[in-house]
Length: 112
Length: 115
Figure 1: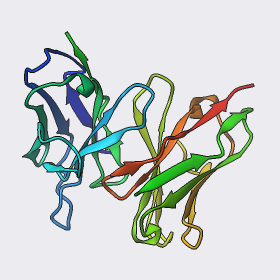
Figure 2 (figure 1 turned 30 degrees about the vertical axis):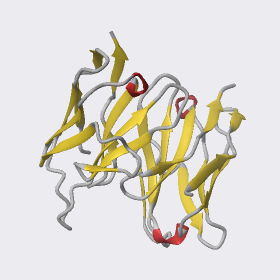
Figure 3 (figure 1 turned 90 degrees about the horizontal axis):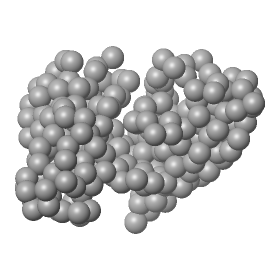
Figure 4 (figure 1 turned 90 degrees about the vertical axis):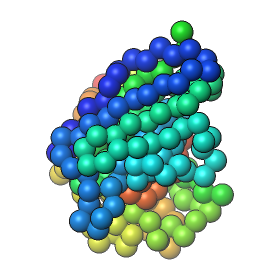
């Protein structure tokens, strides 16, 4: 199984400041069809997860442009350009290139 | 708009069975692969199973293989998860999610396995 390693696991942030989360996979996430099925999800307390970014860098419709994804192969990054109060919660990376799909352990983002 | 609504959760004793449903609307259900993902209380996301567009291909996490069965009825726009031989460690909120990229999720249904 592909192991997804997220860092950090806890991220205190200041409102209006940038934030960054990393995710590394134990093997390349490039699928035989040429796509990289890597996503970032956000979960607020008591809510289901919500997809933010798919295929490394594509924002789902309605996701604010302060969220951006980058990376390739095995190393990926989620950046928030200016953190807002609604951005608190847990962020997960996910790969669906190879079954079983796997998630990172999650990064808890909270306001300092 | 895309909607996924899970149902069928509840409290069940170890060793018993439960069937979850996920009713889909707002999109062409038969065009998408579907996942089941679970989340134990206070824990992270744990992928359970995936099924192809037409139900011909299925894949399971090792932890549920042989006990859980994923299926779908495209005429009813509904995804299912038959859970047999339930264990206390299966206690979780169970979510269905659409497409490989899991772009839409339901609100989840809570399954509690306890004697």
